[in-house]
Amino acid sequence: MSVSLSEVRGNRLAVIGSGAMGGGLMRALVNHGVLDASQIVATDIDEIKLRQLKEEIGVEVSRSNVSAVKSCDIVLLAVKPQVVPLVLAEISPNLLSERHLLISIVAGITISQLERSTPPHLPVVRVMPNTPCLVGAGVCAIALGTHATEAHRQVAHALFRPMGITIDVQEEWMDAITAVSGSGPAYVFTFIEALSDAGVNVGLPRNIATHIAIQTVLGAATMAAKMQRHLAELREMVTSPGGTTIAALHVLERNGFRGIVMDAVLAAVERARTISKAAEVE
Ligand SMILES: NC(=O)c1ccc[n+]([C@@H]2O[C@H](COP(=O)([O-])OP(=O)(O)OC[C@H]3O[C@@H](n4cnc5c(N)ncnc54)[C@H](OP(=O)(O)O)[C@@H]3O)[C@@H](O)[C@H]2O)c1
Image (cartoon, rainbow, N blue to C red):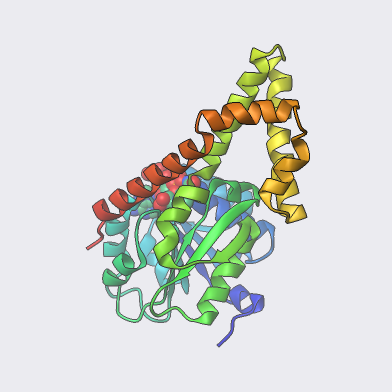
């Protein structure tokens, strides 16, 4: 079975948890015409978020996860990890079945944890997005559960494509992906802030320092994405013998810049594993 975008358009989607990520996904789906607003039911415990979404993009809203799941084929879990057991206890017995597709973007909750707490044969897909998804420039890593088919994979790609790039990954890589692209924007924001501070330290006005720091990161990332050359080659292009760049790189290397980044990612992976253990949904 293969699923085209038109078939995705034939489905109804329940988004359980209409916060930053759930709300962002619904906005992207409607604004990009992937789904019609009438095909989406948004749930949340916060009336204000629901009212805003209804006014802004016209989706159906409900405070009842049960009634949302009853009327939909695809169920997207977008609540915080600690709320997942509560939500699954509501929607899993007598409601979820093999006819549904359960997609989870919840950090730290594994496919097998979800499969163990839902009816047998339920297709499950796990997706790890990141916050740049909110501006259409995100990374969405997609892993399939035991009963998810090629058709379900295509549905997941079609749903998340408006939020950025979508890539297929093995579920065992999810903690590493969480640590690199999930948490990665925070590392980059910290770097931009540091570069701006550094500019101020050598005499630039703050607004100019921040503006050029942001554009430098954006420009370098765009170059790396578009030119498809090895990163070392791109770095060589700015590093002339005896010049300013090599002097700065010397300081970064002497202070263990790469080692610090590696340690940071390692710490995030360890934390993801701890969260996963603590969030056992059984
Ligand atoms: N933000 C990221 O960068 C990112 C990246 C990858 C994955 N994720 C995952 O995405 C999920 C959502 O993250 P988020 O940042 O969008 O969180 P969020 O903004 O807090 O959104 C979650 C929403 O769910 C609502 N909620 C709480 N209990 C509920 C219930 N029983 N039924 C329905 N809705 C309920 C919350 O309402 P209240 O606020 O009133 O509690 C909130 O509006 C998390 O599991 C996170 O791990 C996030």
